[in-house]
Amino acid sequence: MDEEINNSPILIVDDDAALLQALPQVVDLRMKNVQVETTDSAQHALERVKEFDFDAIISDIKMPGMDGIELLAHIRELRPDTPVLLITGHGDHGLAIQAIRGGAYDYILKPIDRDAFVNALQRAIQTRQLRRKVTEQQLALSLHAKSLERLVEKRTSELVSANATKDKFLDIVSQELKSPLSNLKGMTQLMLHQLERGDATTAVHQGLVDMERSITRTEVLVQDLLDTSLMETNLFVLHRKRYNLVDLCRELLDAYTTRAVLSLNCELLGDPIVVDIDKDRFSQVLINLLSNARKFSKKGSPITITLQQSGYEVIVSVQDTGIGIPEEYLPNIFEQFFRVPDVRIQSGNRPGLGLGLFIARKIVERHGGHIEVQTVLGQGSVFSVVLPVYVDPTVINQSDPPPSLHTQAVWTITH
Ligand code: ADP
Image 1: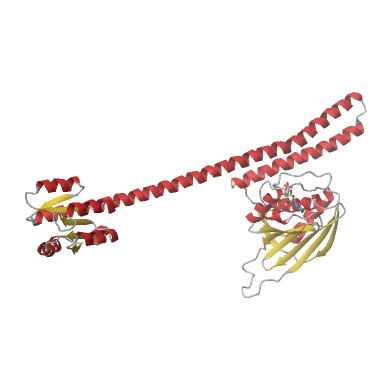
Image 2 (image 1 turned 180 degrees about the horizontal axis):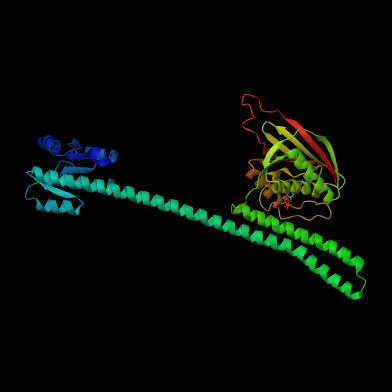
């Protein structure tokens, strides 16, 4: 389309002043959108060709100094795609053949027939424009091929790294499942042996306690894996209800400390904070943070749970005075399968799959919140879950300033 509107630049080279005047007039009269430049010197023509990409060049063959054939050879070198038309004297067949062999697009016989001249020039311009289009398309194609190539490379490397993650995943899972299962097997064999010997009661009791621990551990691993796979496939659904978070935390902490036989102290109990959350999933997050706090801090040290409201957000924080987390690992702490290497764990605990905090982050994010950590190596960590508070749109007054930061509840667990 553009070519029809844009002018086609052409160059006419001739030492004959009369022809140099007549030919542009013919073009002006008979052709549209062609812009003619003229010169009487082949040398100057070459300068122009170096600077500018003409759609066609018409040159007389016989000129003093550099003739048309030599000019043609230079143009072919500089601009192989530009069609060159050479003007030859009538009966100069030898020169015409030489021109064509030298790569001229066509030749025009003197005396010049206007129709033949215009037709030849028209064809030359069209050829040039077609060639340009082909070049542009080739360029576009090769760019497209390059971008496809890059895409294939990217996808391949994604596949390779996904495969590596899968391998690592399978490796970790099989290692982790092996230990509680072989424990179960050992305990069963021992108990059978003792039953056969008849002195079973205490040993069977201890055996069952150990077996239950192994089974629970396997259950947690399997549940973590299931949750992770639900999150990856986007099948993770929340069942939200409205709760007073102060009451809910108290209920969950009561149940947790009773189950684990720990002491729970309520330091402060303030106003309700209303939230729209999935109770089971929130409980999962809280329990995960509490059991990490216990795993990574000394027996007998306090774990503090604080509920604060700031603006239209509630912050549930779990603070321990344990080993803390080295700063370089903080960016990865909420990632899948991440565990701080060579970490000390309180006796009786085992490292997990490194999925707990990843799942906690996903659950909190699905609630429209986020989770963060502050830690000092050797002094402890604070994990904070930030969730949106439920605001009743019919009650809230837009012009009221949002509530400032205040603490609504504090509990301490000694473990
Ligand atoms: P897992 O599911 O294996 O328990 P998490 O995702 O819960 O793993 O935690 C990942 C890693 O973060 C742990 O292996 C541990 O190194 C570190 N971590 C988590 N919580 C704490 C904490 N309270 N104190 C120190 N390190 C912690």
